[in-house]
Image (tube, rainbow, N blue to C red; front, side, top):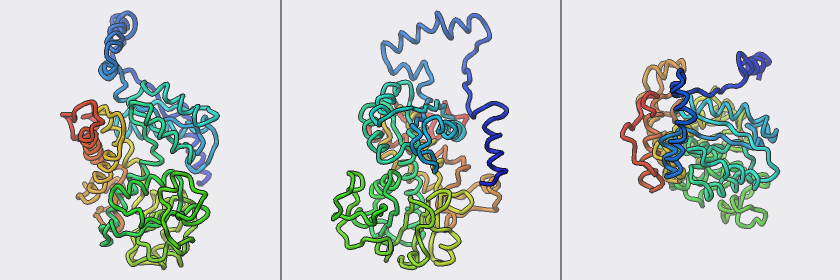
Length: 421
């Protein structure tokens, strides 16, 4: 980052008022009567109604449009374990995206704790305040266990975006890339460099969408994860295949797909040459990918390339997913964000990329047009149609899979932010 941009970032966060969030009042407060309704004595009436039936909290409070973004600061972006307070600008930023893209209110919560159990207990105790909880920037493998336990204990959706948001957008782009490259999903051989929470979530969701687990070769720092290893945790062990492949070179030989969720410059041009014809490269390490698009495209002219960066085509960006997934979950009062809802989000996102792109979206990115193809396999973050298609798909899947406590909304699909109730 340039010195000018660093300075601008600090100025942005500091002035004219520190931070990026504020709380707004949604009811009149101009008269004595207004205040008597807002607080004592009027507030006693909704209190009594909620005590009779907790579901009335959705009717009389902001719970139904409120998400908690919660972190312990143990894995802040690419900066590492800098502690909960240092994570606050990121959590506020996440809140801004929820509000900007899906009209969802957010409280950011930074938890100081000494163990995963302390974190779990803290979140469990406050969970009923919210309509949903977005876990963020928690290191692996602890984040996997934290999410699993909280899903069991809480009656509101628990969603670790670093896992599932990444997986949903990656899978949407991957299915479209396979289609464009003329490859059948059930036959595709996939190399996944990285075995952390995001990588595991990506592979699990790809399997849910048709990739065969015995066609996946996942690598950690020790090489290919295979059935002969005795050093695997329960999450890596799910992808331990019987194979003689041990190195990245071995895995890349004949592979159709490479997904990188690891670190910069770990893939060479020679390894790219080992891949099958018409390969797919998702090099998603940020800010520097596993192999640069310049090197990849100079090495192979038959590939489709995606990264996590906005300055190249096909950015894998979680903002395509999480605001709209929570919108759909909140609007049917879902108790969870389950596999059916994730798969529904995948297909909504990927199908949108095939639709003609309105001119105003093209103008927002300074181009004449976008057309489904090698350099446009997933929608752009500023595509307002995401608000129409993703919440509707997620809400329908929640209702159909039995985790919704509210019927499919009559005002769906959403056409604009004005439709959000």
